[in-house]
Structure formats: structure tokens, C-alpha cells
Amino acid sequence: MQEGPRIRAAARPLAVTTIPNRRSLGRGIGLAVAASLSNQFGAATGALAFPAIGPVGVVAIRQLLTAMVLVPLGRPRFRSMRWADWWPVLCLGVVFGVMNGTLYLAISRIGLGLSITLEFLGPLAIVILGSRRAIDLAGGILAAAGVVVLVNPGPTTDVIGVGFGLVSAAAWGSYVLLNRHIGRRLPGLQGAGAASLVSAVIWLPIAIAWFSQHPPPLWAVALAIVCALLSSVVPFSLDIIVLRRIPAGLFSTLQSMHPVWAAVVGLVVLHQVLTLQEWFGIALVVLSNLLVTSANMRRAPIV
Image (cartoon, rainbow, N blue to C red; front, side, top):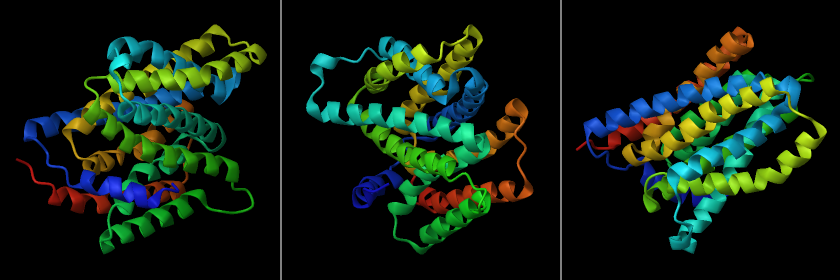
């Protein structure tokens, strides 16, 4: 994430957003939990199709199907959108594709649990970069230590896979900020629909080129479709609703479930067994997020 000052400026007000009421807060938390769990099962389902169409094929189908669902649901009013609406939508469309593409490339190389944990650093960085408090710095150090323990750098480390995971992390951090901004400017799912269309336009020529060389079997297409529904359509729609109901700091806290659930789903669905050291690294990253965001939540009044 190269734009440190800009991210800090954007993140500061989000961390102290006033929560409208407890009922809205409860609904937001419930939706965030559902989106998180759906995301991990979708990612695991997509990974099952890797042997036939690879991560690029899975992501291509995912992006195209997402647009086919979200554009009719969101019904974005393109003619009434101004440049102030368009630029975050365009950015979100690009970020959405980069986030998913690099994540699935990482999953294909280093597994679901490690990939999701690395990607999880994105929303955590929003809170750390948006604060100058010692506790947030300590959380950042703890997260870095967790990554070192989890990755266990050495001659056999898949540096490329880890790199994909870190790029996905930067994209996910940008996704949170852009989604929050779009949710305030465009009603309903208009922003989600418009951004998914932008991403689909980018991925369409990639899909044509890829599948002309890798004809997909029907079972792999079916798995990729399920992946798109569970990992894109459901969470992408819910995230915009959630970010209207809860502060970005609480949203980041709730994302603590992603690495843990990814490890569990990876074990159950993909039979990817983690070592005790890897579980310890995941625990450190999750703990760092809870440490950093809990203080911000205590400062956010509930009215």
C-alpha cells in the first residue's frame, strides 16, 4: 500500500464513526459474519476447480458472473452518475479484479489458510495507518511477527505465492475504503453493480484468451459459478450494506474471523492441514487485529 498519507487521511474519520443504534449494529455484525463465512466456502469451492481451469479461469468466471447478477440487482443509473461517482467505481472495479486474481493465485501456491491470513493484513493496515497511538504500533509489530512465524522464511518459502497474498492484502484494504465511500454516495447496490461491470469488462478478454487455450469441463464451470455466488455476489453485496451500519474499525475487527475460518474450511474441504507453527502465526495476526481495533471501538459511542 504505497499511498500511506492518503490512506491515513481516509481511515481516521472511519475509525470513530458513530453507530446509529444497537439494532442496526447487531444486524451489521450478523451480515458481516454471514459474508465472511460465505467467502471462505466460496474460495474453497473455487480451489477445487484449479486442476481443470486454474485460478485464472476460476476468477474470470467469478468476475463475469458477479456482474451478471449485481448489475440487474443494483440497476446503476449510469447517466446520472457524475465524475465524483465514477472515479471510485472505476477504482473499485480494478481493485476487485486485482484482489480476487492475486488471492486465487496465492491459494493455488500456498493454500487457503495462509493466503487469507496474508490478505487479512489489508483491513488491519487501515486501522494501523490511521492511528498514531502506541497500542496500534504494537499491534502492527505483532501482526508482522505473526506473518514471519506463519511464512517461516527459508530456502523452501514460496516467495511468489506470499507476494500474491500481500498484493491481495493491499487490494482488500483499498476495497474497504472505496466500498465505504461508494456506499455513502450511491444508494442500494448501484455502486456494487457498476463496479462489478467495470471488473467484468476488464476480465472479459482475459477469459476469452484463457478458455480458448483451456476448454473448461462443465463440472469445473459449475464449481466456479458456486464460487462466484458465495465469494463475490453474497459478500460484495453484504459488505456495502454492512459498511453503512458499522464503523470501518468494527468491520476490520470482524474480519478476524477470515483467517481462522479459512484454515478450518481449508482443512474440511481441501484437506489442507496446518502445522502448530502456522496456527500460532494465524493466532498472532488475529490477536493483533483485536488489539488494534478494540480500543477504537471503545471510543465509538453507541446512541
